[in-house]
Amino acid sequence: MTRLVVTGVGANVWQFHSPGIAAIDATVVAVHDVDADRAKLVADELDCPVAASLDELLGHGADLAVVLAPHRFHADLVVTCLQARHHVFVEKPLTVTMTDADRMCDEADRQQRLLAVAFQQRTRTEVIRARELIAGGELGELQRVDLLATWPRKSGYFDTAPWRGTWRGEGGGVLVNQGHHDLDLLCHVVGPPASVLARTRTAVHPIETEDTAVALAEWSNGATGTIRVSTAETGEQQRLEVVGTGGRLRLTPGRLEFWRNAEDFRDYAAAPGDPYAAPRIDTVETLTGRDGRHVQLYQNLVAAIAGERELVAAGRSAALTTELAAALIMSGRLRREVSLPVDRAGYDELLLELAAR
Ligand SMILES: NC(=O)c1ccc[n+]([C@@H]2O[C@H](COP(=O)([O-])OP(=O)(O)OC[C@H]3O[C@@H](n4cnc5c(N)ncnc54)[C@H](O)[C@@H]3O)[C@@H](O)[C@H]2O)c1
Image (cartoon, rainbow, N blue to C red):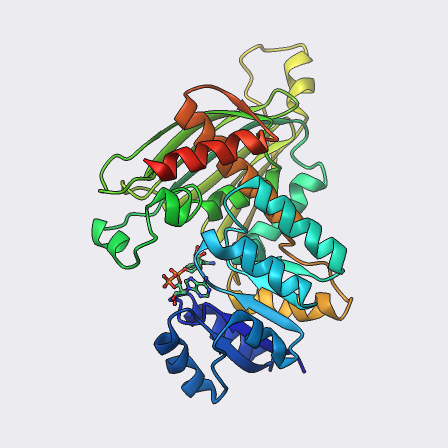
């Protein structure tokens, strides 16, 4: 049976972890939060002790540490847990700078412990199928990628915790928080772009960080696409459309549609005959999805600890999403195209400068 400890247990997001922990029949041996009253509420429910410090928490002999504190604390907390030889499950985003992301992933390697990140949308069955179609070459050569996601929030949401919407407390806005899930789908399903040219703005909410971001993205093969995420507008909740020479797919919450071309677009374009003849679609596949909760991530994590599965969202793959968010923020602030991987020192400097304003 998995023995686990939780830091930042007073977090709102605990509500998603509690069913996951129940699903794997794990025992919470102790909890911690810098706000001891919040920790006590959960400890009473679980009938476990409250640790007064992280060190005390890690002295309880658990196998797994779950980190739910706000993102700016993820790197230090995760590294300390890894050094205490715990596997770690950390909430998304992995962290906010690539210097920290590298440090966390390197430590996991050094300690030979698993580092899993809470990207629960990767377990949606329609997402798994979309990734499989692309990895299996069914879309042919990548041509276009469009991502749209809206997360309408009232400005009062940003008052629910002092860290929200600040450079010092959060290290970014919609790109590192809500829309980070959508950026992760793009990286996980398609792969990250090679460069981005972004415009970021604080359109509606009285916050320091961006509430809206839009970008032109380019992949290494020359394919192009757009990214738009916002907490300041309404619209489709999430849509990822990917077009290749072999077909087109559209991913929306709970649904995947895939149109397979009868022939590769390059063969269609080169073929003689009526120049206006429309390309033929061979088959249309639609899938109604399920899953996408923390429960599936916990189930995957215990299987990975037992050596039976790969992690769905390991630190290194989550770091690709950190990298994309950083590139978008950097591009938006500097108003120029930014290539991935981002300049680590340059990004650290930019965040320090933004936090000091
Ligand atoms: N996967 C998801 O869908 C999802 C959903 C919501 C939140 N999240 C992530 O979960 C994290 C927490 O978000 P939230 O909205 O639940 O936050 P929250 O503000 O509700 O709670 C954060 C908790 O962490 C505690 N804390 C702060 N600093 C700490 C430290 N250094 N050590 C230990 N505890 C500390 C606070 O006292 C508080 O109890 C964020 O990183 C967020 O992005 C993920």
